[in-house]
Image 1 (tube, one colour):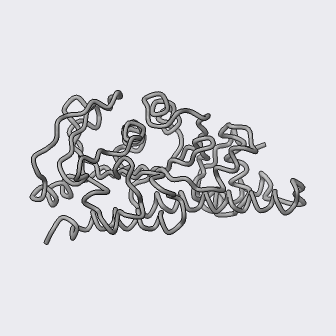
Image 2 (image 1 turned 180 degrees about the horizontal axis):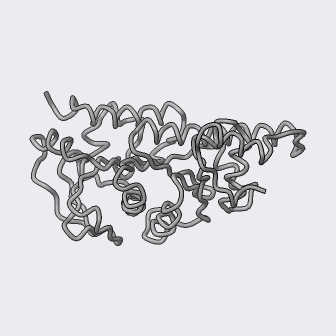
Image 3 (image 1 turned 180 degrees about the vertical axis):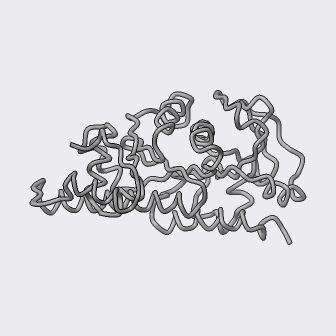
Length: 274
């Protein structure tokens, strides 16, 4: 058995393939990181090789010191993850200070973790703290309909959350806390990492204006499902705006949103309701 036969690695590769099949990862767009459990690290450790040198991230997450992450590679294509995993993905170890990584498996041929690893790392840090360690997945993709919404709506959490909640009945159940919104910033650096992590203290998902969406969750199914639900709601919103030329005859009213939340036992962010 090789490392590619280990369940968590297979599940990681499957999620990358699912995202590619949805059309969310043109060229080298998007990235996926997973904070590994101790038993998963132990299962993979026999296949680790001599680690690379430590690389400073420019951000610090002390609560993630010594952790291991599965990550996509910088400049790598989601399309190739299942076809050529050893060059497309890898496992990195975090140093004892929580501010640097080194490669212990994969990313062959001089590849490095995704250029947005600092953003992922800071989001893992705040989501791990906010969820008492349950959150393990950070997923960034480029869903087209959600990106289109960032050209039409004010860039704030209330307007985006309300538009998505009202687009499909499932939405207030799947993300009752709403979504955060980050104004446009140059991707890949410490500034956008810190801005996103501030929002992810409160939200499971954050929109990057004119760029894409960040989602978090405890496992691959939950996180992929969150991305899928938000993008489908965005598609409905765009279709309604296009077909109705901005005129909407009826929608889900705020008291109806409250009724959904009551029946499904979730707590909607009340300040987003009228």
